[in-house]
Length: 190
Length: 155
Image (cartoon, rainbow over all chains, first blue to last red; front, side, top):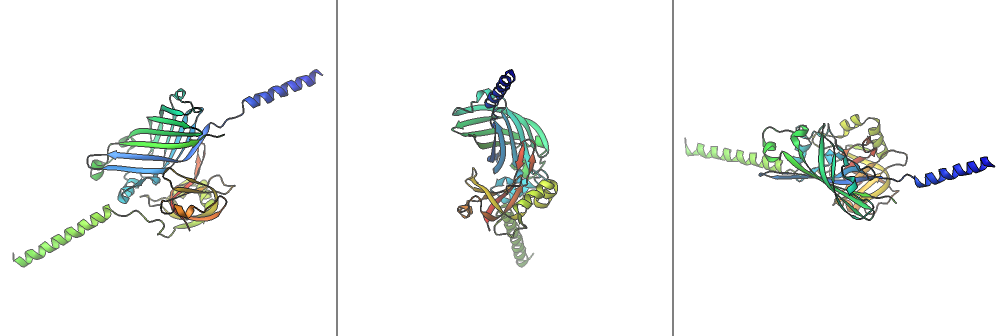
């Protein structure tokens, strides 16, 4: 008799435990993020867009990862696009993907369950052109219904990633620091 | 110098400048590659392309990607697993077989979007586009990435 009660009790406890600790999906995926990079000089402004950015957002840990297919950047001028991809610049055949892996530093400031706009900071490692550097970017997280939008902005210094041009048109027509903005949309499960 | 010689030298000089200027102008304003007007470099099943990448990504990238971004034009065939839109209002048709770990994502353009309108999940379709990046498991994303084709249209 005691054995039966004991068995029932253990089963009951286990059942209750698993009910309350059912795994919730906190890692969201976006396969169609947008990144724009913009260079301003007195001579000309250059802008390029990529609409194939893959990223993940873990709402429980604040971890964010972006994977950027470098050949997906489109420029208005075909010649500029070729130069950008070439060995002298981003060498996109050798480095087909850029990666950012970071974390929201003030995760407490965000409530993913309540509609609203939250300002956060994200710090992490940016790997571009084979070089990894720690960067910090500002971001805005917008929660609306079951949609979460993450928009980020950061300035990258090209020389930091060994993207240099000593002379010629590139050195005068491309800014030393490029403004990079991104937008990714995620859909909450359930 | 006679007037005749001067005249001819001027003609040659101006002619040279025009040719040089014209070439510069063309180079600077050259049109973007017309993917759909070009013949596909490769034609294969979406599954085969994915598996080529999952087996050896370095070799696959060397084969399909090109130095200046003018990478290979590929016609892929497969089953539609999903259809969506990206942030530039382009239709994205995702080809993937149930048994594969990754698929081929095909993004259409403003001009070709209408050809994707009648496609449905489950359809067998052939799509031609330019490759931007390959498939593979990403340890940071903790998931498989798909092959990405852009400038697509149905064949």
